[in-house]
Image (cartoon, rainbow, N blue to C red; front, top):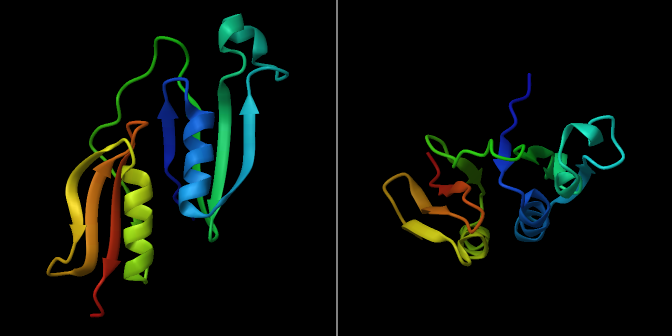
Length: 136
């Protein structure tokens, strides 16, 4: 079994995934707009360039997403996407990149369980936790 976060965006999925690809050092393996698909006629003409499905792979881990249909977007709440890394410098780099034009809820720093831990909501509305745990 594999569990993968699936994020929903309000028309800016492509922009968000290009940003995540850069921040996280991953590779976008799929970026499918409605246009040219069997679902093309099921959305308004101005929405056809919006993303029906996207897949980003980072070190073998998969993050997926799409744009919500017009009028169906709900702001994310009740979860965070957690990024666990082993290098504190990498934790700092990722946190700083994701926090650009976002909202920091807990600045990255040392905690009783982690060398580095921080929480933020990025400019696209996605909540993140960046975690570099201490050795147990």
